[in-house]
Length: 97
Image (cartoon, rainbow, N blue to C red):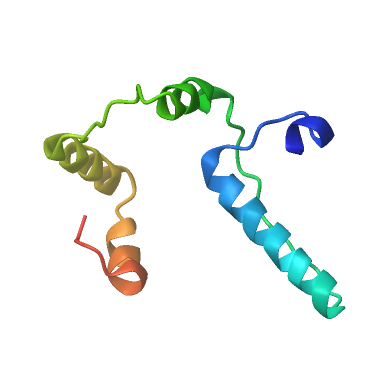
């Protein structure tokens, strides 16, 4: 649908939002309720096409991102954005940065 109307292929993440918006619109159509429905189309899926092909043809290999690389990235983020630690504690309640 989006490739025809908008000229882009949505990335996997916004594709879920699109599905949710369509589902909500169909509910409104059934009930007659008028509603404004918004969603965010935050990216295209052009870079995902090869991964889609590999996944659907059983060639996508599982990959576990190394924990040390995650820790390294989190450390860099905490140095770049020191305020993230407070936000994390206040709103997210995940492991500290």
